[in-house]
Image (cartoon, rainbow, N blue to C red; front, side, top):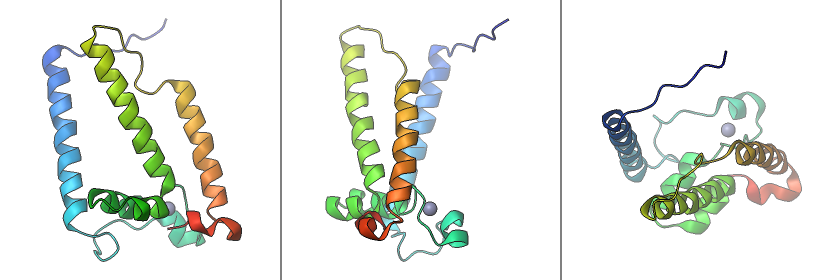
Length: 139
Ligand SMILES: [Zn+2]
């Protein structure tokens, strides 16, 4: 027997949207006002600390800080994968909004096929950014 996930009613959905929006805004404010390159309270990447290699997430907070300050090229240098994923998320969000506004049904925000593709891209990105010829991908 297949388990059926519980449906969110309208109030719960609004509370979740409000909660997620609050967390995103508070996180963006912290990243805007406290530079990850100079603030000690941000978590350190344990993979990088243990191996000396860059994982796909290395440089994400610095990249977000740069994006929030409008420094697009710095953000790309710190973590190009994040900038790409944010751009895709923005485009998908606009498509979602457009479909919703026109009364058309939306599927999953990111279909499973896309998430598998993203996982593959993250693995390739992690491999490349640790090679000397692709040092420009390292933060
Ligand atoms: Zn890392």
